[in-house]
Length: 450
Image (cartoon, rainbow, N blue to C red; front, top):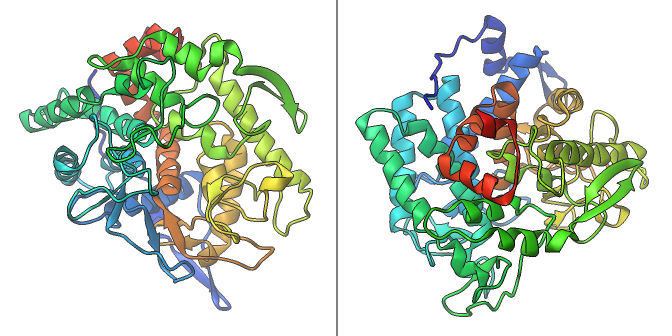
C-alpha cells in the first residue's frame, strides 16, 4: 500500500493556533480562542514535541518522564521506555505528515531509534520496560522485573510495524529501515512466553529470576494488542487457542453488566470497569472501528467504556471541585497520593483529572473530548506546557504539577491524528502479518476487506 505523504496545507487560522498566541490575564496566561482544527493541531504539535525535542539524545527514544517543577524528585530523562517509545514512533510519523518536521528529519530519527534497539538489551527477542538511553542496558522496573516485558514489547512493536508500513515502498534508504524493523519483529519469541507451552501468555521473564513475577495475562485490560501480535508473528507465532483459552478464558471474558446505566459486554480485571488507558493503548494502531470477534464489538465497547468514565465524573459522588461535562477523565497517572490507576469507582477516585484520559478518547467521543480540550486550553499555563497538557491536576487540592509521562502523552498525539486522518490505523492495519493474525483469531474488520 502506498501512503500519500501530503504537504501540509494549513490555513492561516491553524497556523495561528500552532503559534499559540496568548493574552495576559492577571498572573495567569490564557491562550487566545482557536477553531477546533487549530486547537487540535496545537495540542498534537506540542504533544509530539515530547517525543521530538524531549527525546533522549543518544538513543532518540522517549524518556519515561520529564519533570519541570520538582514536585517529584525523579527526573531521570536518560531512562527511556519501550512502550512509550512505540507510541512516540507513531507520533513522529504523524509529525512528518503534518509538516512539524521534514521527512529527512523523521527518517534520521527513526534510524537512530532502530539502531539503538538493535544493540540494546533484549531477552528472547523481547524488550524490557526501561533502558538507560546512553548505553542500552536494562534499568530494572522492579527487583524481579529486570528482563523482558512482553506487554511493553507489544506497544513498541505496534509502533515499529506502523513505521515499517510507512517506509516499505519508499526510497532504498527507507526500504532498508523497513527491513531492519522486520528483523526486530521476527526475532521476538512470543511463543517463549507461554511458559512451557501453556495456552496463556506471561507478562515477564527475567534472566535472574525466570518466571518469578508469575503474571499470566488474562483479559480484559490493556493487553489485547499483545495477544494479537503474538498470533501474528510469522516466526514465533502462538496458536489461536492461546488467545481463546488464555486471554478470553474460554469465553469467561464475556460478562454483560451495566455501570452508570451504560452497558458493557466484557469482564474487566479487578472490577466492573477500569482506568481509561485500557481503551487506548491497544487501539493506537489496531483500528477499533468495526473491529469484532466472538466476544465483543470493540468500538461500541470502548465508546461505552469512555462514556461511563465521563458519566461517573459528572455524577461526582465525592463532590470534587472541577469535575463536570467539560472536565472528566480518570486513568493511570500521577496523583496527589502517588502514581495510581484512577478509575470510575469511588475507591479509585482521589480527585485528580488526567488530561490524557478524555483527549486520547477523541476517537470514541469526539464531541465530548473536544469540550474537555477547550476547557483545559482555557485554563492556561496551569495545565499547558511545552509538551502539551501536563499529566495531571487537582482543583480540589489546588495541585498543578508540571510533569509529563511518555505513556500518557503518546496516546494523545496518536489518537488525535487517528481522529483527524486515520493515518496510524491505516498503516498498522495494512501490515500483512497483522491481517493474517487477526483472521487467525477470528476477528472481522472493514480494514481486513480493503
